[in-house]
Picture 1 (spheres, helix red, strand yellow):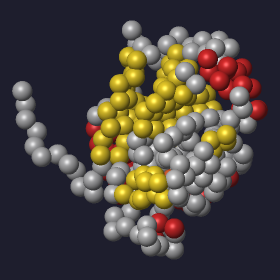
Picture 2 (cartoon, rainbow, N blue to C red):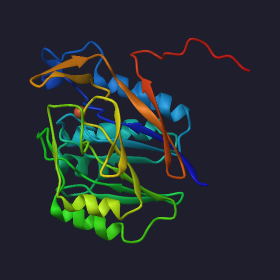
Picture 3 (cartoon, rainbow, N blue to C red):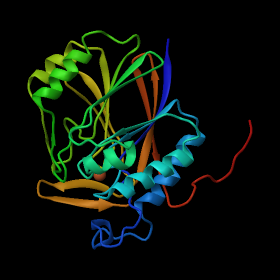
Length: 264
Ligand SMILES: [Fe+2]
């Protein structure tokens, strides 16, 4: 049976310089910027030698072409040859991502297909720039239906930014009713996402949905009209064994959390 180890990192919110950004203003100003937490998490993830790394959106926090070039340089410097799959979030500016990260002159939603070791990865761009709520269009559902017509040897892993459903009350995701049928009649077995800054696992439309933490801050809904921001930051390791998904959440600190290393 095929197996795969995925480092699932989300909501990096990288900038070269945070001065003047939302993340530099009260109440979100922090002594250690998100990029430092991201680098700590990325180095830790790379050291564990995953088969691939997925980044499920909010790569850059409303930055420029140069911020995406900076992010790409950081990733190329740290990834040790491990493939990295990017996904766009609502704080990503699409044209800047295309130019800075990919070196292409495009804009619009970023949907892509990859294959790895018998598994198919479908990247679905669920984001509208600067809009906290997610959306999946009829055209995207038609694209999914076409891509999923032929099953992949080991099954399909869906990647996007917004959870389809969430315990967080401060956003929602709109999608056509037809998405349920497309997923039900497909080999998609898991959806990896972010956005909520709140780790969560649930079943939605018959597939397992796994939401990773952020590297910027945690968010928790404490009442229908109130959220709290927390010092919670982290990422997931996902072991895929056939279509079974085992998830280990990692917390990330502004220092390496290892106490000691003991052979046995
Ligand atoms: Fe985010």
